[in-house]
Length: 364
Ligand code: ADP
Ligand code: MG
Ligand code: MG
Image (cartoon, rainbow, N blue to C red; front, side, top):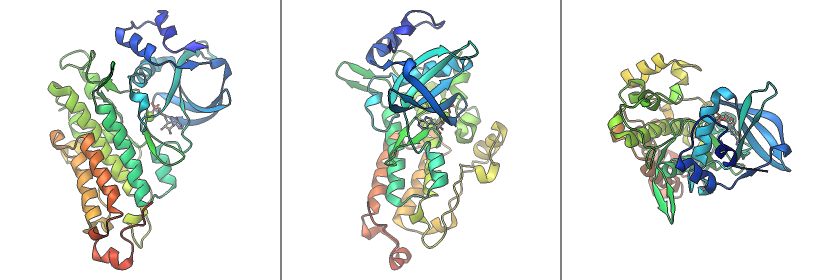
């Protein structure tokens, strides 16, 4: 049985350990017994890892396997999962352990074990299913709650949780539980913003700080090279919130209650209609940074109900061109919470929907 962190401390790895790593390793008492781990089926492939459904001592788990070329991404994701208190939050993916082993080609490979989420990522779920109002609110609220917690610097007893930026918020990096609640996952590019390793302008990592993430979800200031590195903490949180706005758009476009009496449109990724499946950095730069284009709201959202107005306003306040004008994740969380209550408030709906009996949707 390997104790997470113990092997790191034997000094086998090239990168040196900070006191923080050691503290965090000690914090996460996660035993992993790889001898009993079976990989059963490939369930996902991202930029950095292949994800398998696996079995560990009769328990179903997900295993993210990184090749040796992606060791840095692995080390970063593991260290973020070990940030104190993070694992206690209901909207952060459950981490079960990490280890390295030799692959069949003799090279080392790196494994992150996590809870298995049967529906896979949010993007996949939404492409297969439409969602009702309360489910859609609960899913997006959950993601937002997870992000707000990630962004928060926290002292609890003798534990310190740094503020962390996710830096790759997308609907593919959100996982869906069996009960359709959602968790934030894929912390390979995440970064501590406070504590002993805050980012500073002008250091070697400036480029790495400003240009990461998935091109489709990159904020205009990232695309345009105008990220405000003087206040790195706020700037990186604002970048996350921009992407969150796009994730809301993708989600609510699949909400059946927002399309009364008509077919719900097929699932689309943000900017898919404009730029297709593989937008380039340059295309995104022109569309989002220069032309300030944002996803279009469906025709039927012109309806002036309070719910639609608040929803559209929330998206726009997340993806504002002016990063400093964007909502904080905490504010977005509050907005989503209020939105979820609208379904039970009969006073808010418009006449058309009222007369059709379609608004408010039944709660629950
Ligand atoms: P990458 O860093 O390579 O993008 P991710 O952690 O985002 O890797 O995983 C890639 C994909 O694998 C996800 O988009 C999701 O579809 C699937 N996946 C990842 N983790 C799990 C999990 N715990 N349960 C179910 N599916 C998962
Ligand atoms: Mg991913
Ligand atoms: Mg990743």
